Length: 250
Ligand SMILES: [Zn+2]
Image (tube, rainbow, N blue to C red; front, top):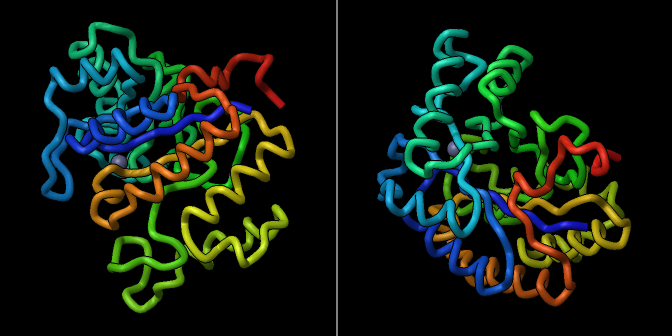
């Protein structure tokens, strides 16, 4: 099994994520969009270039729209321009794309393929393999669990257990007990252990550095990376998973 991580949007806080990954011999793919989000400082071109030399930098559109809701022309422009924007900064080919909000359909996927990307990530959780390089699912997001402190786009203000309920059906199918669901860290370790024991192709952790900061999850993230290192699993970027390569298909 391989261990990969990805980090969305391009916040300056991604530099702290990158350093933490390096401390535990892990790799990340940073999906960067030029649009400022959540009033956070975003990475500058020199920082993006540096990050690309240590990990992988992927594209994440130009303005972070719902690509399935904008016109086909706009979706095509967002995808193609973001690849060029990243390549101009890094001076290297940009092979990986991440759909804003995970939203994609056949037309959007077609634009991603025609632009020359080799793989594209969604936001689907509790998956450990991918049969489609242009709809690569993830294993787990780092986000407050089993409850969320503040209202966000996805959950009703009073529905603090929304994240737990949404995931629990899938977690139960893996045979993971409710006792492992008391914190994000215990859940992450239990799911990782399941994936390794059952010899899955990969474990893919993803998140937003600004949420790790906002919800004070740096300690849990570091403990998890330390756990992964102790398990002796190799860290790779999303691109290095080579989902499209036939020997990795299951
Ligand atoms: Zn995003």
